[in-house]
Length: 68
Image (tube, rainbow, N blue to C red):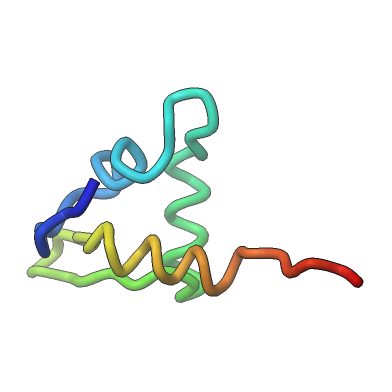
């Protein structure tokens, strides 16, 4: 589902990207943000995410390649 450049909260990001059965915790999201493994924006004291950019980062940083 495309986000059309919407910025969303962390809770909404997890809902958009992961299905309910495989959704990681808010702590996982916080740790990824802290490690700078996923992109985020700060608007004042609010932290927001672009779901499309986060999906790209997850694909780039967390995809395991095929072993030959």
